[in-house]
Length: 246
Image 1 (spheres, one colour):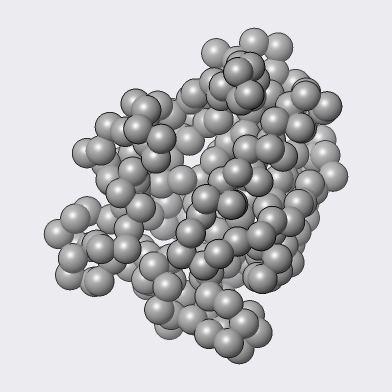
Image 2 (tube, rainbow, N blue to C red):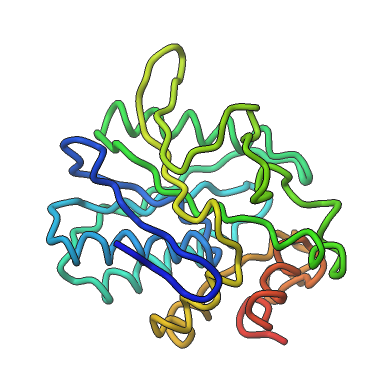
């Protein structure tokens, strides 16, 4: 299924995964993963597929707010797509050191593997998108702290392997789940335009939360910190912070 605007094009397609009956979306509550959930639901509906959807959210023990937003988002999608069977929203908690995503990645991998083995969740759709263009990133203070594997011109992922939108994971010497990153080669300007094109600004956007600030920086998660990388990216693309704050 094609999603296209002036900022790029995404062909959302899971047809290469055989006998797919359950698909998860790694729903962080940000705009990117929320759009991927919309794409998956639209793909299922458009092609009249019998695929159950699992919202899947990892929770930093020091920053519980993303669970609140993610649950609101999954509830909205149940209303938007009543024809789709949604599995109970799956959450898990992990320890995380600010500025270091190693523990988060390990926890996600372990939980995904378990759900693949025990619940036949064959694919996890991820909302990772591309960085803003380098010249713009330098202008708005987003160049040095970016995740470099998200650069469009970087062909390698964080593990040094060739980047692909759909990959089969080898975990503990066993091929298991698939990871799908349909937004890998489009940046948040594309995502922002999709929200406008598909009428998601009034219902979905206000529920999304991109800020990764902790308690003190966000007044206990009642407002965006406006200083983290993800706040800056959202402002660049949408002209707004979380909650429509300018």
